[in-house]
Amino acid sequence: MKTRITLYTLASCLAFACAAPKETKVEEEAPKLSGNPIFEGWYADPEGIVFGDEYWVYPTFSAGYTDQLHFDAFSSKDLVTWEKHANILDTAAIKWARQAMWAPAAIEKDGKYYLFFSANDIQRPSRQGWDPNNDINHFGGLGVAVADSPGGPFKDHLGKPLLSEFYNDAQPIDQFVFKDTDGTYYMLYGGWSHCNIGKLNADFTGFEPWEDGELFHEITPEGYVEGPFVFIREGKYYFMWSEGGWTNTSYKVAYAMADTITGPWDRIDTILESDTTVAMGAGHNSVIQKPGSDDWYMVYHRRPIPNEGRDHRVTAIDVMEFNEDGTIKPIKMTFEGVEANPILE
Image 1 (cartoon, rainbow, N blue to C red):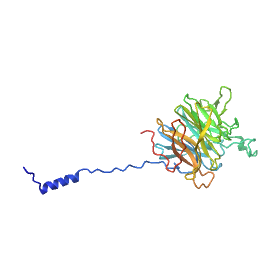
Image 2 (image 1 turned 90 degrees about the vertical axis):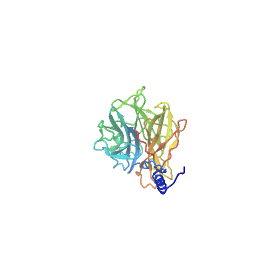
Image 3 (image 1 turned 90 degrees about the horizontal axis):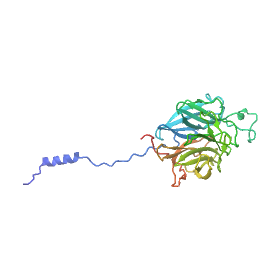
Image 4 (image 1 turned 120 degrees about the vertical axis):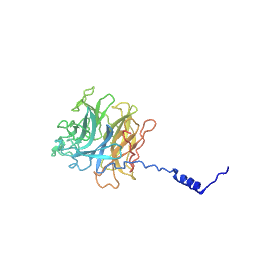
């Protein structure tokens, strides 16, 4: 029996063929990137930290000392889109702070959020350039404020500096607060090329003495200038700090590794520095780890090219990677920043 193909049959087949789904080439969407800087404005000394399912960055408002009198904060769900929390702390709340509030460091304890900071850039008679007629040099140092949420508003925790004295010739600036695996809270701080470590007491109103009765031990590594930061990865402690001059292109970040928070800290290498194709004066960094992962990020400030002012600094973020032996690969500064990486996926 022969099959008879009619015009109707042929038309039906063509109609079916036209109706059949066609293979389409799916173009991959370009990843969402943070870009650098990650938010607008002149901001420096950024401290990055995770609270809950959000990334937070607390920077210095980068301005002249007489104008550097408040802090803003920034939060993000994914490292790409940042929300500004304006004026979380200022001199209206910190009555003793009269100039130069900078280098905030945030931490959570028992449901409260604490913001540590430097203020007044205190000097002393032995320091070259100290002006005995300027009484602001007699009072200031490290302060601490407290709030019920990471976005503030923060209020003065003590009504006075937490630390205003000089120990081991370290200027009381650039504090960082670190919670160790045993629950002890440590403060690392210091300018003038000296770094101290002390143990905070339970309510963050002072310090517990070490076994030898001293409040602070010096742990200064070779090349240290300022800006200490510590984190733990795979059982190792990493200590980072800034070298060079914060007002120029010599600023950079170096690091050391140790088995304990107290060291000894032997300098390993420089991992962040100026790049004439991207930015200059990169330094005063912090580090963010995505919880439950081995994803790490360097948050830092840098100077755009061309740079037109001492306080023209911006906040950037780039990926931080490790070698097999745990050492840190040099950070590659970018304009692109990092890909979106939500904490809850």
